[in-house]
Image 1 (cartoon, rainbow, N blue to C red):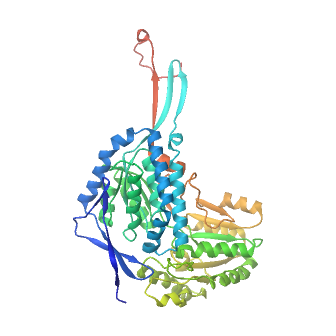
Image 2: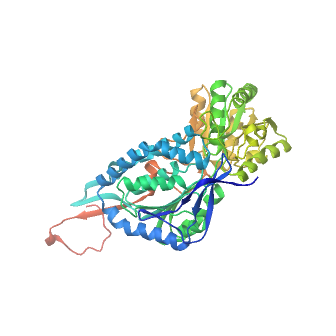
Length: 504
């Protein structure tokens, strides 16, 4: 199909030192409307010099911003929170147009990002240190937490507003300056957020954006003035980001992929479990790292559960995000849609049963990058549809005989991002959260994304680094501790003592 170019194509530029800056690299990329298959924007790609300019602006702003009183930093977070809240519909419109998600889903993304700004509003309390009087005779000891300096965030296409807010709110509130490299597929929301950050009173240079591709990422990873990198994306890239960043002396948190299992025990409420599986499997067209992609059905629960899921799938309306009746939008690109559809074909070839084939959805006949919800039964470990992160609206059902078999399957998986159990047995649920080797666990909750005052992140190959994202661990990631030991003795009592210091 020929690519259609929409009217009024937007030119998306960098944001450096409080202003939009045109690129001189001569390189750019198309921004697509995945629901229409049309070009709606052109994003300029940074060269090394432009990345250096953004880092230099952040470095120049750091000394003054670091010295800004905590109450003032909190005030800017309160203002940013108010501005994001006021403009949540505007942000959602950008998300829907560039990413394809429905407006309801986009508004939910903005709301979850907003929670993290609200958390950062409490930064004076979050940065309180500790003080111990008279640790030794006449000696006091106290600890403080100080910002790192220039930090950077590299964010994915599936949450163009929420994930940047996860990072920038804590980073800036803690006194750092920030350089964002958003996904080149969905750059519009980042620029809109930059304008809101400026309106909130954050000084120029504290928040910067470099648009681009691997050139920009590689330069941020090697730049000597960038002290820390936050990343969200696929596992292979997360591993590379972590290894490269740490090799260059940076603190890194890199969140990778997932293969999230939902365990349904025989005593579970079938309707509730089916509602949850459909909501978590097909929301945002499955393009969520917290999407449920595998249902582990124990024993006789499998057949009625599959029937209930299939009944619900039949009622899902697939269509463009700006259509109020749409419940599920397109995938991000035509290439990705075709790759996801390929898993349905390979699953059938490997012996799985294609219970619902999304390739037959009417929306597939449009120019958009649509794929209907798909349901696979009789999936086995080792099949491609089980081992790979599909990142699309394909839900696999694996039939297991026992709870122990299911937990072993989850724990044997290389990913450990999120999981869920559906049961009416409190003892089984408690045992599950104790047994399972996964970072985020839901009990009768299909997408266990923590609220902003906890922290987000998985285990195993779903996270590279020691600290999870946002919340208390986010504050820890964006600061470093300093312990001060002080005394104010009478100068007349001073003497040389070569012995090892000890409490007296």
